[in-house]
Image (cartoon, rainbow, N blue to C red; front, side, top):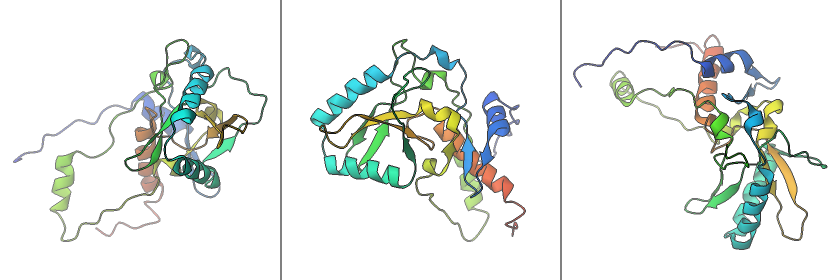
Length: 220
């Protein structure tokens, strides 16, 4: 490309306003965000029944059971999910069905599963704009310096906490053995499979850069 088109800055969007006015940090520096809801959560119907049915089907045909158990144990050990104590109130919450991807094993959470009102959690969320730089900007940046450095953030989504008031939208059903009682857990961090998760994760990374711009000097 000989020329890079100039794009006007977009006005502040609703997703940005929600993030900017509600995010905070814990004493140990971890960021806490809310789910940007665009519709009333009361539109969500019963999600427990469907999630329970899908979990029973999962138990009957689950492959690599030890991998599944190890994944969930690590989730709990890292304090990325917490147990919901009974009795369970299934109103004004959302149960996320889950299953495994076996190519490179991981558990996938499906927040697009409809509730009894045929509305899913993803249906009531704002997706947010794309915050990553365009490919052309990235390529031009690589031409500016002799050395280019790339990095990967391990479990990037799960480094960011979801505000306690919104964790009841991230409930899951889990037990290690059919002989155990059904247990309800709450995911405490940003979750894969949620419409707003990419925006919340990248926006938090940008906020971390803004907040620490005075701490880490720009050597450019």
